[in-house]
Length: 330
Image (cartoon, rainbow, N blue to C red; front, side, top):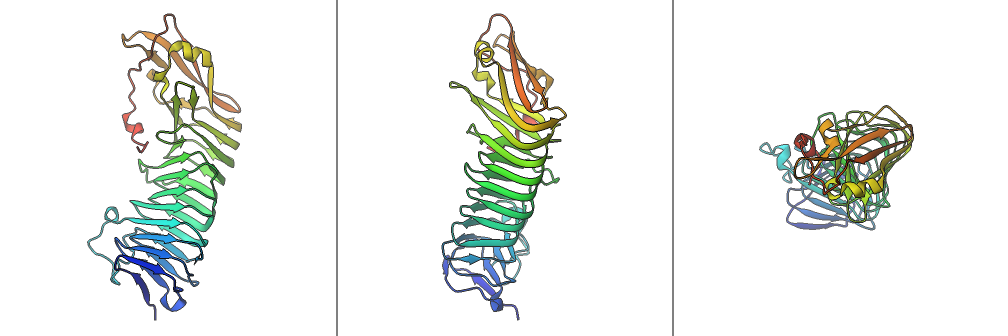
């Protein structure tokens, strides 16, 4: 007979093995648990509170469900009043041997991969913060933010955003994504982060940017900008959203010349700037002071700024971008 191992009462240190006889582990709503033991084959772990997996653990459940409305709410029954947006759940992979067959997360959830971990597949509506090597033998699909930190690697058979079209679907960070097939459609690829300039590395034989948004931040002084390095082949077609160039004078942009922000072994197709008016740069008096063009070659994508006479501090007019900017989650 299936028995449930339920964490409730505020805090628990799970130092007893979750056996086949108690093969459903539930961390209830608003509860906190530290796991330092082992799970048996066939175990399902439901997290509606906070679960931290620590050194010494052998965390190998067949299913890890985080913040799902179908998850147990801590009293042995599903909560009929709970909606997906009402449920939270945080999971921290901080130590131990971690290998979950299937990871499924709901909205308003967070998973922190802070030590080497693996899974068979990931389907996520919540946020993933990858701060160590994370290997997924199958598909990794998300409709929310995935952040890969510097020095960390997300490895998967395939990487894609959900066609559901969540405005929060973002891949950012300064680490490495390695996958056999990468499809960025319906998402935002944003190297670095909302307040950080950085370089995102992608290792894949086939990377599609069709129907994707590519957010590129520029910073000044000490000119720097986001970059995407693809060790593989790109199918272009995405829309580029450059931000921050209003910090430069036309003379400074002229000194920079070209600003290369994507490189790859090969690129088929072209990228576009969000709005044609975005190519015209005006000063505060609505005078045209420079133009910007995007160029796609067989191995790189770059901006080319061309100033007109009387350079001055730049202003930007006519940016009809509010809808797509909302894809960038502050």
